[in-house]
Amino acid sequence: MYHVSSWDAISNPGRKPLRKPVDRPLVILCCRKPESPNPLNQMQSFRFVDLFAGLGGFHLALDRLGGECVFAAEWKEHLREIYNVNFGLYPAGDITSVSLKDIPDHDVLTAGFPCQPFSKAGEQLGFECTEQGNLFFNVAAILAEKKPKYFILENVPNLLKHDEGRTWKEIQAILGTGEDGLGYHIAAEKLSPHNFGIPQIRERVYIVGSLIPLEDFSWPKKTDAPTSIDTVLDDHPADAKKLSTQVIECLEVWDKFLKLCPENVEPPWFPLWSMEWGASYPFEDTTPYALKQLSGMDGLKGFKGSHGCKIGKLRTIEERWAALPSHARTATLKFPKWKKDFIRLNRQFYADNKEWIEPWLPEVFKFPSSLQKFEWNVKGGVRNIWDYVLQFRASGVRVKRRNTAPSLIAMTDTQVPIIGWQRRYMTPHECARLQSLHTLKKLPDSQTQAFKALGNAVNSIVVESVARALIQSVTIIESHSNHDVGAEKA
Image (cartoon, rainbow, N blue to C red):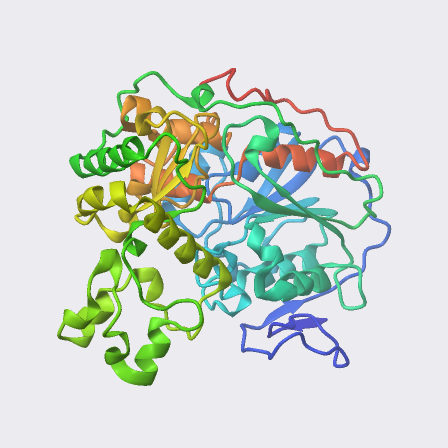
């Protein structure tokens, strides 16, 4: 019997911990080594559980393979109601409050456990995140108690690199075939919907485990066939949200920038940070924060901040600090290499093109900081912003070709992809097609909740392909689905 009470989760007294233990809720893992597991090819169907179920992407995929969902868990009440409408099964609530004895025996466990603790977009607290980081251990507890033959887990790709790889090593130690592990043979792979003919680049890591060795397992074959976002779009749908005046104004300003850019100057591949155009604060060997710690705000008196603002002319410490770009106000003594590279590239681009940028620059001042950044992912393309797929992100205004949609994330209303040539946002139903969830009977009624749920969802075609490959390592399961996402617009 193992006690999961720290980062080391499952360990014997002799194993050196990978890092300093932290207090964790006690989870008891009753680790039973399996006795010659029966392969699924001795069954007419298989049973699975759907943890952190959301809209039910795992359920939809495994149901098409002939599986029967015997248990689901989802902590958001409105998603539990929708799950029941779509699948006729009402999920349990908070997984941390579910008794292991109340979870039925099953053959396959699926879980897209919360990714925020490991995401580059978050604080990357990992297992130290008291709200969500510990939920992996609840998954491990169920695996230890129920010993399903297989599991499929999904998370952000950064999980593999998080904490310099220690997080992934610990997951392998807990679940794997080592002395202290649960006995699963494990494999991991990064996959994206566009690898399966779906017009969305959204890379996620899939982790599969099997009590049977994975010698015959191979990941589903990826396709390099071209895709087009047009395959998921409706023709001017009535429920499409129109662009606000501010959004149109912002996009027109950046469109003007593209048209002012001389033909012999290619819009840069790197993110454009307009606040660096005219700035002179030090960044190579020190940071504004370091100077502030050393000399107070007088340390920046002779430098320029965002868009060339003279910091020394501002009276208060608060005003001087606010005059710096937000990415320069981090409490660090040294910037990471990627940030220094982007600052350097932006300042050089401005120096080389100051003649035509300077008259345009004041037009961007009126917008929030995030809209003063620009990402042109259309190298060699026609310089008309309205010809492309657009998205407002924390990293800036992003412009992409029409072959794929931006990665769906747990979006706010302002981050929903924009169809430039129709001057509108994508609809929830169109975004559902990007996640291969368009056959669901019901989505959240609120567009805000629908987009957030879709951003957190797994793509059902990707999951189906992984599940089929995994289970086919011992049995053959015929899919009942049509993989051509453009063939049926439900």
